[in-house]
Image (cartoon, rainbow, N blue to C red):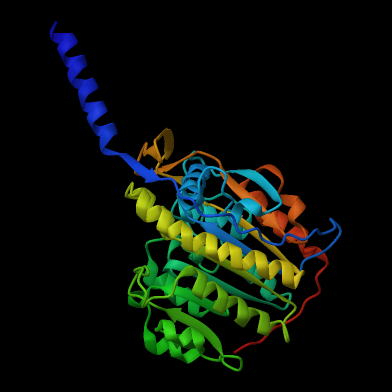
Length: 380
């Protein structure tokens, strides 16, 4: 009888804890905005690469955002990309990855330990896509709603054994081939050193200025991650600025690489806060909408969208009247596969199931990297 009582108590605790993580999401009624999607021949080679990352964004994060925005039949911008697949995300010797190891996989094509940035598990430096492309005359840009020294953007320029050494990571950015870097992270930089090599932006209004003849650009719009407000730039704002700047660079460069991250989708999922997560996802999907339209107009750009991992173990349980009930399984990362979506020349390479390291090699294959000639693009 005592054992039975204990089981009842344990069951009650589990149910209570479970209920604490259950949230209600109102079903939206917005009409789908159909985007122009053009056809590209498989033989076409892109000039530019845009990699869009939804940190912590699993398939159910996308699904609940879709339902909240427009309902069960609504189509987000991300839904309209014509080529889609699944990505396996494990790190080196760990089924669960963090953002550092996952971003290292895209940036270098190699698995590494969690917390490591573009180093092998044995601490050997791995070349990143921006470093490789800089030798081929490409310019590169990074956008994040976190600190620009945070794990995902840092993997594209830093080589260090801990993602948390952000002061050292900031120093490495200033000596990297990154031409445009926008995010938060003021507290990690020596501003005097920044202005020696970069045009420093700290206000949202600066994104409206003309920088067509300026040096490299570093935007630091908050002390650490960018606190969402009307006075701070969104992912969409920063991405459109970076895109314009990098496109202008192609007058003297062979092409560009841009990585833009919706960083705080992950943070909301860690907090098991579906309302905040959906708000962050809106910015992310509006960014994708603009990039789809850019790709349709430019016709020389490969657009890729993926996630480093799923966060929160999000479950969609049932419909209740005009709402949906969701439940979080954890406050941590999971091993659930994530999506990959592509549009533009080379997009056909991203169909099917793939490891996250394959994204790196598929990007290089798309641009025919092995046959690119040595070139320079000096924007100092």
